[in-house]
Image 1 (cartoon, rainbow, N blue to C red):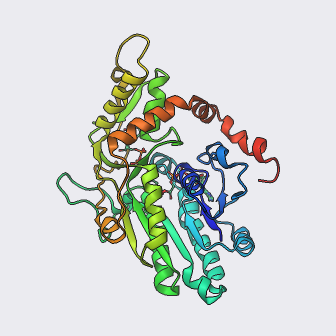
Image 2: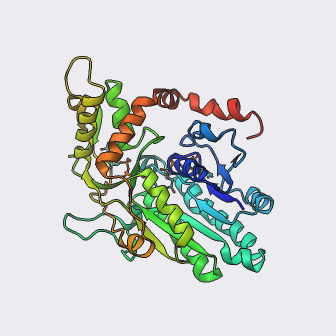
Image 3: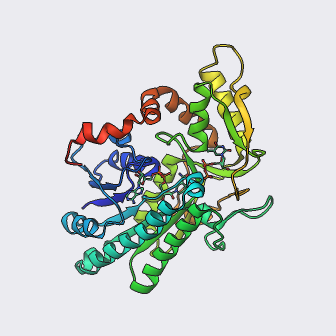
Length: 356
Ligand code: NAD
Ligand code: TYD
């Protein structure tokens, strides 16, 4: 039995693969990742010699490759993490988002539908397609609005969230029309180890340590609901194991914070754990910059369904998770500097030669 994980060299997919393989008796993982700028095999260095981790560099939009991999490895589940994921990049250039998040998900669904249709009855019954999505598909909340439930109307506002919304709709349609056994998770903002330093939390840590400005968009009062990445991974494992077919599960940690509050917390932790040489606070590096166009004001996830139906709850509080995250960045300067220099992109060649 194998799991096919797409996008498993990215932030969440990478953490998922590591956590999955750390479980006793875990099934092997076939990891299909295109290795865009966001894919980093160095994240998976600790399993690079593990026979249970099979890495293939490839695109979820490549129908022939998908058909071959499914026929060869016969996975019992497909978990789709692969996506273009950065809102700011989607504003600068939306096309890659449509290509991977919409067309790629469609091609993956088509390949999986053909494979699933040919399975023996027992394998067909047990098979799952789990689609990893985001709370951003629900749009923006005003202060005082109730948090997003699974039945909240879709109102995506950025090219990123619109492309994810389209992918969610395709997944839903493949269940409704073809009976494909799908599960969808819509999660709030993640943070934790191996997070590419273009997103708020790792960017602020890395810039602070480098003595660079900490660019807060607009007034910094936009609210996000933060979840430690390993809690997201445990939620996905739980939904895969026990989720009801065709259902959507919102995943979140009840941790709404304004961006400026996050940046202050990071500065204070760094002041404690690695004080600046001049004795000043890292808060002095904060600068307010032009706001993101169409910036969503507030996200908040109501994760009661996942808790009440499947018994999932996060293991970390925001305070414990953010401390672990800052510690991780302090302890892993090599990972960070190779991301910044671009040297991480040589990892495939170094580690896998021409086989990858
Ligand atoms: P990421 O950008 O860190 O990683 C994405 C991975 O997908 C990379 O390894 C990249 O190389 C790969 N990829 C991109 N295009 C591909 C393609 N066409 N074929 C194969 N692989 C491809 O993203 P992430 O933060 O790990 O997000 C993973 C998933 O979780 C995404 O679907 C995202 O929408 C969703 N999500 C993210 C967050 C968050 O806070 N980061 C929150 C909720 C949901
Ligand atoms: P980000 O990590 O890009 O996640 P998302 O846009 O998917 O929520 O941004 C989180 C919040 O932080 C968002 O409100 C934008 C803001 N932000 C900044 O203020 N400065 C920055 O440099 C970045 C990258 C984000």
